[in-house]
Amino acid sequence: MGQKDPRQIQAELAMPFAPEDLEWRLQKVVEARELGIAVPYVTNRAIMSRLDDVVGPENWYNDFKPWHGAGGKDAQLCGISIRFGDGWITKWDGAEDSDIEPVKGGLSDSMKRAAVQWGIGRVLYNMDVVFVDVEKRGKTWYIKKDQQERLDYAYLKVLGKLGLSPAPAGGLRPQTEPEGGSENPAGQGKPAEQASGKPAGGSKTKGIAYIIRHARINKGMNSGSTLLRLESSKGDKLDAFVRGEHPELAVGVILANVKLEKRQQDTIIYYMLEQYEIADAQPKAA
Image 1 (cartoon, helix red, strand yellow):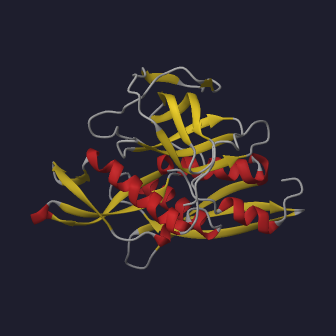
Image 2 (cartoon, helix red, strand yellow):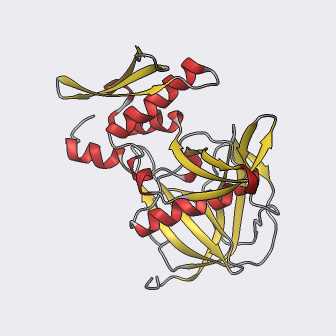
């Protein structure tokens, strides 16, 4: 953990996650209207990655204990321990076993709640009610796949109101493509480093310019990255990554001759900014 003080650790653990690191569950369904209320949770994979990045894999561990309520559902307790100096601090929380894969669901949910005790994902408590279209498969209601863009927008809108930007994606989430597919304009311009992962589709030349609406530089131990929220001239929005630290990619800068590569690693679909030219290098006031 090196020279990090507790306040720095607290701030880094509480950094907002990328939309890709969230999973959404139905809290309530109005069957007659095929409408539901969705609530977000941070995936356990993203929680583990956050702890590894902030304190190091050798400086934290989790522990589980079964708990039996009086007349209620069995539940699981999770404690997440972090090393501070020569000692450890553990914070606990619990969750009831789920109806599907009961113990596994209880373990997973209890870890999510224990992580909130450390500030991980606590920003999600600022979310407003998000309504989504739902569909019934068998006896169970699900969020329709084409609602993912609405969910991501609702989350990023809350972060914007709080003056926050999401960190790069680090967890897994089955993510759907925007309705009608994605537009990946190609052209000649400034090359960016190649991203890892396999291409999920080629790029197309559309001649669309993008303006940078949000920009965040993430500094890592070996190399950093730059996360951008881009808006096309058609009003379409997407998040893209550039390897390395690029302070010239600031809010208000307009990019031309853009080449975005859609990539996939496991179940994650993401975009890498491979080529671009800065058409307007002077950031505009919001």
